Length: 581
Ligand code: ARG
Image (cartoon, rainbow, N blue to C red):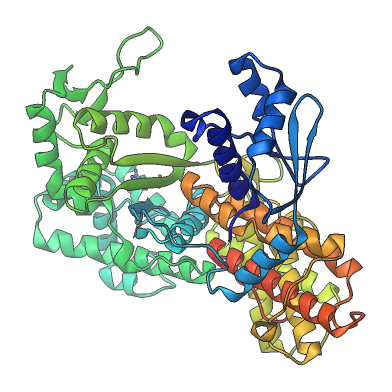
């Protein structure tokens, strides 16, 4: 569905090149929302300066060449040279109608599809997922869904931390507990925090255990089959746990999307070899390092990316370099989006810089760190349980659902719900609340995890948007017609109808921008603005009791288009929309 801003930008550019020559065809027409019209084009001001002419004169000349009769009802030059543009009601109604009829709401799939790796979630094996992982999981899944919808070839990639020295002690601890404990979900193995801490405590306090653990690391790295089998037992316990969280969240990740650190183990040596062959990796203080230009420490000394430690071991950076090389050489990706916490920013900047030195990243292959800000408790500190421990994700989500139930029972419903229906709705509301709260804030900013604010039917919340969609569905039920039977034609007579239809036309641009910048909050904010415009419409324009049949048909069609914009938009964010509420 064509965004009015984009449509008018193209028209003003045409006028510019007609008036001042083809070199102005790509000039920024500086289209902005206007107080006096729908939009204004402000290009005359900078252009006048450049041409040494009066801005109003330049504006008049642009208007003289402007061919917008089909889109715009009124053009006015005002003030120093603003061109005010009022869209025509017929155009708005016609575009809304076109969107309604189109399965993709008028949003075309991209004509330049890219292969995009979206790396997200990436928890660590044998450790509890924390709220940081919750946020990267939710935001990453939305980014993947959005890019999918735009027509890109999306590779979901769960880069789990499943390799490295801690696995020596973890495997030994597993052997001490007895392997069969791992098969039971209620065992000490599946309480991952306790399991990890117990292994750690033994490692620190028991020299014999520490020795065994170190030997176990060597065996793991050498590919000893029995050690690998035990390692797999631990990986499986963790996968079961990750999947339970993903299932609860309704996240699209599956086991097939897991490509953990272990996957790149065999690629570490050849990656390092290539960096040495290209003279990028050099020995410094016994370690093999790369020094990407522009990264210096406090004293101005160059900062290293350590590729191989002095003891011969590889590390986190080595794996990330091997990952980039694999994605470029083997998977032939065009773009990599790393949905990972902001504290790892410097790590990624430096790794990307080394990858650029090696030629793996270049103008054709982009890597970006989609930074995720910390999640804080209502006290402004890193989120903890009341007892001060790390928050268990499953418990956090259960609490969200429980609280959603309390709030749900307080609002008015059209009909009573049986227990099973209520439970299903409440689950969607609780989970939707957590997800939308995560998604509505710019992903790189810190955000306060506040149940009371997110689980409210008022304000910028998931439940408010879900409720807006459910209310529209209820109009159709009362009217005895299915939403996709509402055929219009749409007309916009009332200002609230016009404002709503105009808002609906912004869907494509919102999805597009959210995908281009990997920032789902742009879509989240847009969806809220649709619900907001709908509320004003609903308060001012009776639908089932419209004054005449034509108005009723138009309003039902506006309701249907709004419903589909809300549900499609929320679906792209991964927020469920219950049929009834
Ligand atoms: N497993 C890491 C953690 O929990 C995140 C991995 C991020 N991805 C990467 N390619 N380094 O902090």
